[in-house]
Amino acid sequence: MSSTENTHIDDKQLLLKIKAGDERAFELLFKHYYPHLVIFAQRYLSDRANSESLVQDVFLKMWEKRSSLDIRSLKGYLVVTVRNQCHNELKHQAVVRAYEKVDNAETEVWPEYRETHYLDRINKVINELPKQRQIIFKMSRMDGLKYREIAEQLNISPKTVEAQMGKALKFLREHLQPIKKQILTMFL
Image (cartoon, rainbow, N blue to C red; front, top):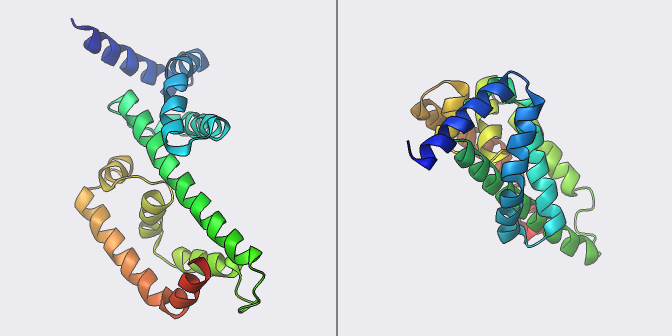
């Protein structure tokens, strides 16, 4: 048996123990992957503290969702999840920088329309989506999961995820059209 097969079997055994709530197995997993994932996250974020925090959050979420996780490749799952969270963090940082830029300019263009107003409106429209479509949309756009990953987690076909995302995006475009230009003006 090759060493990759041994690692694969060990990962599967670790996953089974973690799903059963074995904290020692989770600690072994954490100690093995954490340093590598922090270095990986730093390539995206260029910030050690932020990278450490992000990777810790990934492990925390994994522990919290341990009983419902369906992971085929532990290393693959962790790398993809950290990468997706890095992308989300970079998007968040860009929005914060854009908002600070607008805020620092101290312009009083439409003072009633601030970021919270837009975010509240966007969240309200998202919450109007049918429940499953809302879950799929949030998993894709907020958690950064790929359609295949969403399909696996929800036990549905990737085509169903794709169709639901298409309907969600159409709904959002239609319902957010009136404020689209204002949002773009604010963040550009």
